[in-house]
Amino acid sequence: MAVLDVFLKVLHVFVCLVLMFVVLLQQGRGGGLGAAFGGGAASQVFGGRGAGNILTRATAICAATFMLTSVSLAYRSSSQDRALAARVELEKMRKAEKGTHKKEKAAPTPSATTATTITLPTPTDTTPSPSPSGSASP
Image 1: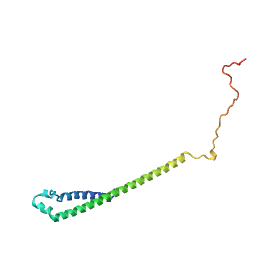
Image 2: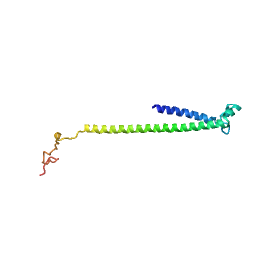
Image 3: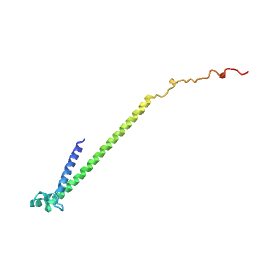
Image 4: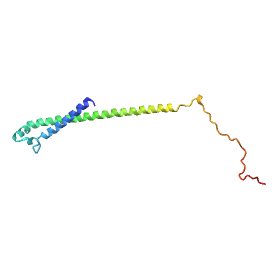
């Protein structure tokens, strides 16, 4: 694994966790997690226009970073798959070449000096065989 891959994965997980936390801190219709921290001080810190603007910006930055790390991890993963497919194809071609070389070595081509003669059986007796009864007719 490359150092860049490890860095992107760690950054991706960190941004994902921060994004979840920032989204949960935002004040929604029911008050969100900001209202759960306590009384009036919580509404001043997490509520109001200034805090919402900071949380909105943080959400946008985290979301953009999350998207970029997702796309870059997907691209690096697919490029590794392409390299692996190319390597497998190269190995198949090498095996095919080795197979043709083995066939050529196993079955040598006949040459003029190694001619073989084939002898065919020839009939030796052309006289008809005697009848099965063994007796001649009168």
